[in-house]
Length: 377
Ligand code: MG
Image 1 (tube, protein in one colour):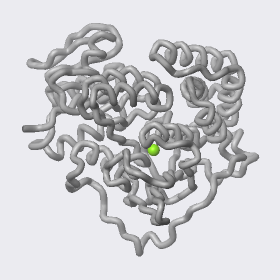
Image 2 (cartoon, protein in one colour):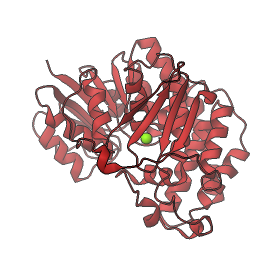
Image 3 (cartoon, protein in one colour):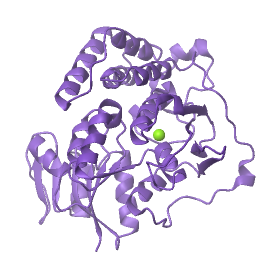
């Protein structure tokens, strides 16, 4: 029987690649449910080509235009139904931002496999998501390339012992720009990532390394790792996606050309490895691979994120909310690049961590961080 996928966030960069992977193996996979935030041609096209049993737009509006056989609903209640769609075997959470937390919590409550491409849900509410999964017996599978790499190095066992998790960071599009010129960088400059083609928000987060800070917090939750067992190393070629060090001194790395299709496909097929759309690695042609320590002067957002990781509670949630507002303003050309870190720092300095004990509390923290960030714009 085919694995039935509920794809939450079907029209974004990751969502479209999940569709590609599923289409490559039509005998193995069937997308039975799709959900997206807003409509547009891509969503209506997916309803036609995938003909899922259930299709949801989270925003309210007219629910017309669906092909025969597709139940098309709109609004929050329908979105919640999609995130725990009863006939799905796997929930692929590919929505971006804080919006992914509710989706992840609902899916984690089903007791099924949850492929997590949304990192913000673990940053903002990792304790809640992991607890929900533990309670229901749901299996959380990482899709973020670094965390997929760690998972592969741990032989697909997130509970396996290790001495250190080593995350690699490309440094983003502005890694070679002289520090004094960073303030003048535009969204177009920061969006020109040297190795990865991704959504706009995450590409800016790569430039500031806020993304790598998020990934440290993500790794803490996924691998039950204290902060001092996680290391970040700069690696400009993005060939080594992350590494795990073990007690005996052995270090395992996962390597490939950068492609999200590999971790996406593996989240669906593991422990099997099937052919993917990734070229064989030509080590001789690559020549040298480079590693170095991150430069705190270039990446103040990364330092702020590590502070939140250390403080815990709802501070990572505030970090995420403040970051979303600041990056959005930068993308709109409303603030300078270097203001992103200043705004995030300004928001965090006014906050004391509270225990991240409920979704309601986190939603309140998120809203407070956003309004504080907007006040600083
Ligand atoms: Mg990543």
